[in-house]
Image (cartoon, rainbow, N blue to C red; front, side, top):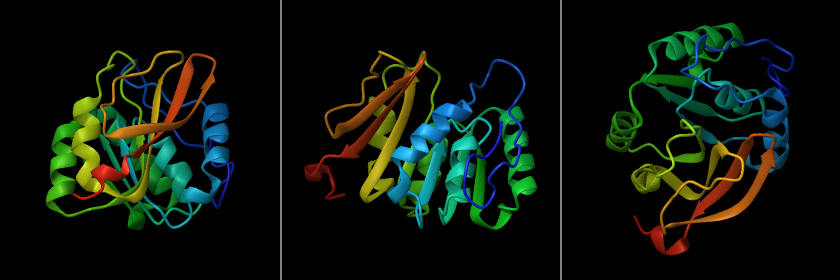
Length: 186
């Protein structure tokens, strides 16, 4: 795997070994970030189910201000730390080795807000209503949630969010969500 564009363009990053993670393919990341061009610079990024951290590291390379990576797999977290150090992003990243519920609770207690949220849960996780609902207090006014899922399948996200765009690349589908305006009065 490699960083596609930005200040770390062409630099290689590692992916965790084994079947516990499913790294986002380079071509999918490239297309995804082409769609996000204007959203990334200066953004605050949350990467839940972060695996190798490729999505948040790509965002940092393209001008995001900070990123929080969260994954419960210790091997994935070890690889994230290695990738962050190799790219020199220690000062603008936080890594949480915890499940999504624990990470979201901790970030809520800290009063953190995010502009971009990458969600790449296991494809078998098809009911994400609790995940989306728990993210509401962490979202800035125009925050975007980018959900990676199995192409052709649409996980349940709840009524508080609208899908504004979606694309499929082979087996991988990506959907973009914004919180409905009536939910923004947190």
